[in-house]
Image: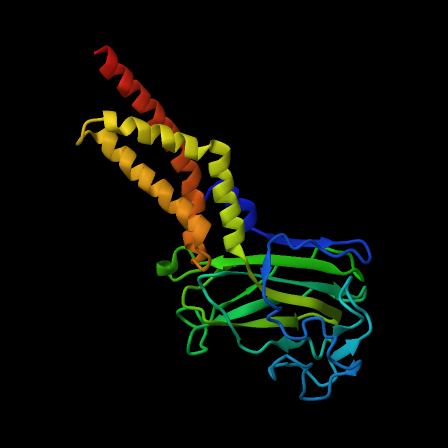
Length: 314
């Protein structure tokens, strides 16, 4: 069960138009370098991509007729001076790039984002930007090896304007059902390939500023868990419960429950303070449990007060 605390984070998928030269806000802390090499196409010379070749950093799995890929001086906001232009025609209506295999950890979190644009004369908007998941043998990560790909939401922008889209990728919380949602990382995934395609439409489209980063989920979860405990003054509640416990007879259900709850609170607090490389699902479980646990601690404190009062007056 996921709490409302996580809803906005789990469903982080946006596609927006921004004023000229305004950079989008990445809403999560990033770790390391961009895993997409040459995602802004600044390492490639301006001009048509040579037949049978791809821009630097991309794999040899580009497809489409020769001459459909061009590096142009037309960049998205804050993304240097170049971008990738894909030209489709009714006779050659499929083209684009695949990235190389990128190694990932399916227990951690990632974010994929990028800019897209289509010219005013484009028919439709068939520019699927996304990824495909692969297992340790570099086969499709789903059971049939046929549905292991997902796409980001398409930017809802007028023709000729750059649109930005981003999606947070989290571990699959139910790996045994053989399915995974668009923003979930299959449990058996060990690699992914980025797709920047133009598919089944005619016209001119552009890609720029394509990014894939590991997300520092631990820092976000730690702040939320410890912040909730501070706001509830968990230390004070714990001190009151510990002071009251010696007055509760051994074997009483109330004492057993209090001991277990104090141990759980200590474990969550210790993990949030000390551990760095935990699986994201473990962090999410503690985030979900923390507000429930704090409510139970508060109720337990009053139960102990009532128990002490009854013993005193009895």
